[in-house]
Amino acid sequence: MKVKTILVSQPEPKVENSPYFELQNKHKIKVDFRSFIHVEGVSAKDIRAQKIDLNNFSAIILTSRNSVDHFFRVAEEMRYKIPEDLKYFCQSEAVAFYLQKYVVYRKRKIYVGQKDFVDLSPLIKKYKDEKFLLPASDQLNFDVPQTLNNLKVSWTQATFYKTVMSDLSDLADVYYDVLAFFSPTGIKSLFKNFPDFKQNNTRIAVFGSTTQKEALDCGLRIDILAPTPETPSMTMALEKYIIEVNKVK
Image: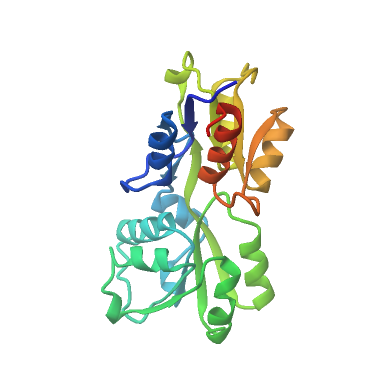
């Protein structure tokens, strides 16, 4: 069956040159975006209940834009005056660049990893005597605590925000040829909103092994998988599939 409509379970890209828009225009298909999950901040009161005192830390580990936003939100709610000598360890350049929304970059001690969390290891090890705070979500990647424990540094994890399943009730009578998922929680959100969901002719696209596992555990048939050596991105995997089933020359 040809693909004419795709629902991507993420927010719509804010950049005009997104590969999704190129895919839509090139193959004359309709691509919609809808977050199946969203982030909600944890209150300062709840963070205090986790026995977190921001004054006890000399370094902050930031793994995403969400961690940046919610660290500074909580600091403001707690009336915590952020010291100028606080060290910031950012997982990637994108996170470090986003940090400029809150701090004057040249006046702060900022250390930047390449991409994956493990890339921060040499930097954290260099400052192993610091007391590190990891403001994170309630769904932390397993490699993060493993990496920090292996480094034998003093670190504390605190839940500053939670991943919550979105209300999708308005999609009850809407059909798409392809549903694209990027996290296990996205799959869970589908079945929470639509417990009687039947895949039938709907094609399921998944990104990553954990998303793949969740989809299979829920009895879904996976038609499109990324990343692979041939299709390292979701848009490339979608295009490859569209070319095959739509018989695009």
